[in-house]
Each structure stands twice: as C-alpha cells, then as structure tokens.
Image (cartoon, rainbow, N blue to C red; front, side, top):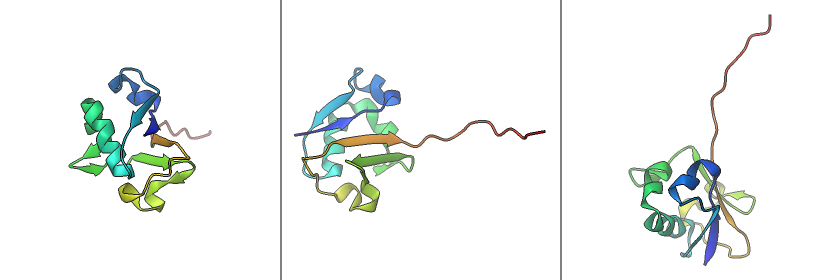
Length: 95
C-alpha cells in the first residue's frame, strides 16, 4: 500500500484525513481506490473520467503528467500528493 497526502481543501471529503492509504500499482489505480473509499472526492478530482486540469498529482517531487500520467507505476519509496492549482486574486494597478 501507499499513501496519498490530501490537501486541506479536500480533507472535508476524506473525514479530515491528512493521508489516506490506497492500493494499486499505478497512479490511476491508486486514485480509483481513493475514490472508492471516498466517493465524494470524485467530482473534485475527475471530470468525465479524466483527471481535472487543475489537479496535479506528484510522486515525490515529480508531477506524474511529466511521467506516464495516470499510467505511471507507483514507486513505493516515495509518497503521493494531490496538489490543486490555485488561481485568482486581485490585480491592482499602482498609481
């Protein structure tokens, strides 16, 4: 088993858990197991079965999109992290 670190905005869907133990040999299988355990997470991670554009999955320091995406084989020596992209803010013009 491996663990996935859950970011603060998504912890409400995992019962407040910071980390969740998941099974699976690939990132996709691990995320499927995560969603099976916590179904309320699915719409926050996936859209029509595909990982949402603003959700980044890291294995150690590597963004899995730069590896084999959801087909990336899990390296059990490093942890997985879900990192949502953050956008927004207010643009101010200096006078």
